[in-house]
Amino acid sequence: MSNDSPSGRAVRLVPLSVDHAEELFPSASDPEVWRWMPRPRPDSLAETREMISQMLADRARRCFAVQRLTDEAVVGSTSLYELDLAEGRAEIGATWFDRACWGGPYNAESKLLLLAHAFDDLGLARIALRTDNLNVRSQQAMTRLGLVYEGTLRSHMTRQDGTRRDSLYYSVLVDEWPSLREKLIARVAAKAAA
Image 1 (cartoon, helix red, strand yellow):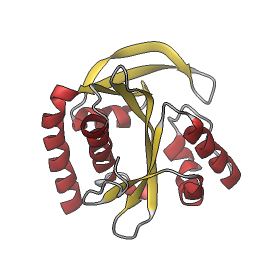
Image 2 (spheres, rainbow, N blue to C red; image 1 turned 30 degrees about the horizontal axis):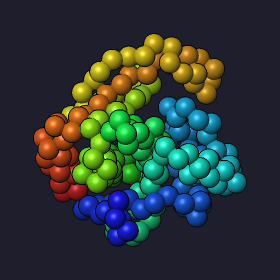
Image 3 (cartoon, rainbow, N blue to C red; image 1 turned 135 degrees about the vertical axis):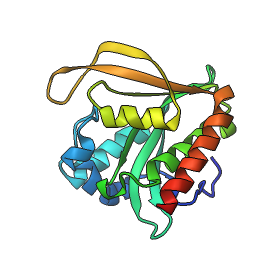
């Protein structure tokens, strides 16, 4: 990703830093925003800083803050993780947005920018996303974005409440990227106009 941080119509992705903790804490500590996240919800600014530090220490992860262009506020975060350049693959995750941004162009455009970075800059062949089987909202969003459902890993992870979750996997391949890019551009334009 170039030093000038890729921008779209509504957001830009900037490299995540611990300095973003204060802006991200309100959304990261919101139980509804964090409901389906596999890692513990941070209860304090110090825990948010620690979580971001752990994310940044992972060498197979590229983390970004999502900055709204109209006021430069950091409204969310997203990451490439399990990045394997030799195999040409990664997953997108650790994505969350302030609830006030739900339904707007922010998630779709952040995915557009992150996928462009993955396919166009890093030369990856495959990007996967996974979600909790109970997270219907996320599943619908992935389907609307045009991702392909691949299957379910049964009893894949432990939820924060101790129950077992199935993980639904979705993906996009590099040869599907041009078509998905056009869908995402149209989706962002429609959301921005609404």
